[in-house]
Length: 516
Image (cartoon, rainbow, N blue to C red; front, side, top):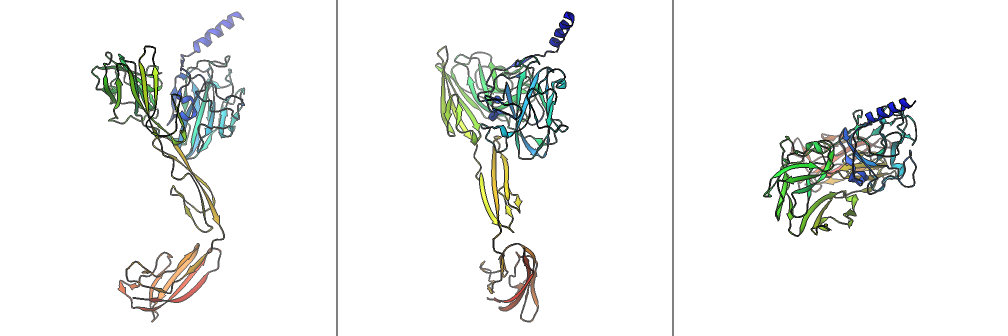
C-alpha cells in the first residue's frame, strides 16, 4: 500500500504543468473589460481574485451571498451570423478544474449583471473520471443548460442558438489546481470554438495609447495599448518601434508575457542607455519579425501609427494617457479619480516615488457617442408597414431591437415598440380638377387615399370616349398628355375600381376638369 501511494504521488507530479500566475486585479477580470474574441484562444495565465469588481453574485449553478466568481477572467463574443455557439475549455493540465458561466449581454449594462442574465453555467467538479481530459464547455449533444456546483460528470451544457447582433460574456473560473484543492495556480487553457456554426469577430484594431516612462535617468519606458496584443507579435529586438530619442532601442517585451506566449496591453521598450532630459516621441512600425503588433483577433496595428509624446524631466515624469471608453461606462474611474465627461486633460494623477521623482499623468478621454435613438414607440395603422431605424420593414405590432457595434467595440441597443391602431380610417378620394402647366402645383391627376389596397384600376376617357390614361399603380397619375402630346382643356371622365382591406370591391366614376 505504501509503494502504491508513492507511485501515485510521483505520477501526479509528472502530470503537473508549468503555471503562470498573474497579479490580482487584471483589467480582463472585470466584465466591462472582457477580452474580445474572434475565434479560438489560448491563455497560459492563472488568474487570482475577482478583479476590482465582483461582477456576478450568483448563477443558477452556484448560489452565493458574495460572489459566484473565483479567480475569474472574462471574455466577450459579438455574433455577426446566426448559428450554434459551442466551445470547449481545454486545460493545459488535465487535473486543473475550470468552471464557467455564459451571459447574454445584449443590451445589458456590463456593470450590472444579474442572476437571470446567465443562460448557461457549469460548476461541476473535476475529480478523476468527471471531466475526461479536464474538458468542459457547451455542446450540441447536451440538453442541460445548467450544471450545479459539486456535480460529478455532466461536462457539457447545451449549445446556444445565437443570433446576429447578440453579444455574449463568458466568465471562466480558475477554480482549482487539482481535485484536492479549492484554489491555486493553474497552467492555463484553450477556449476552442471550432464546433460553432455561429460566426463572431471584428474586434478592435490595436493603437498606441499612452506612455508611462520610468523616473528620470531611466533606460526604459512602458507603452500602453488600447487593447491586448499577442506576445508572439512583439519583436524581441524592439524593431516594432522607433523614436527620436538620442539613444537606440535595443529590445522590447510585453508585461506579463511568458516569452512568445500570452497577451498584454503594455509593452516595455528598452534603450541602450538612460534617456537624457528632453521631449521625445515614439511610434510603431513593422518589426524584423515581418509584422507590427497584432490583437487577439490578429488585427494589425495600422501603419503609419500616431506619434505618442513623452517627457523626461530632471524633476519628474510627465505623460499623457489617451483612453477611449463606451458611453455606458461614464462615470469612469481612473486612478481613483471619478471622471464624468469626455475631453482633453479631464484629469491628472500625480505619483511621488521613493526617490522623490514625481510622475504626473494627464488623461485625455474619448467617449463613444450614444445612439441618436435609443427607445422609440411608434403607432401605425393596422394596414400600414413601418420601416425601422435600421432599414428593416415590419408589418405587425411588437418590440424590435437592434444591436450596433461601433469602431470602439461599444454596444448600443435601439429598441422600437410598434403599436397597431385598428381604428385608422381607410378612404379613397378623387379630385375634380388639375392644372398640368409644369409649375409643380397640381400637375398630376390621381386619387388620394389612406389604407391598404388589395385591388386597384384607374382609367380616364376624353369626351369622345377615347382612353387617354390607365394604370393599376396607385402611385401613378395622368399628366394631361397622350403620347407626349398636350390634351385640350375640358372635362374628362374617369372610372376607378378598387378594394380596401376588409372592405368589398367598389367601382366609382366621375369627371375631372383639365385647366390650362
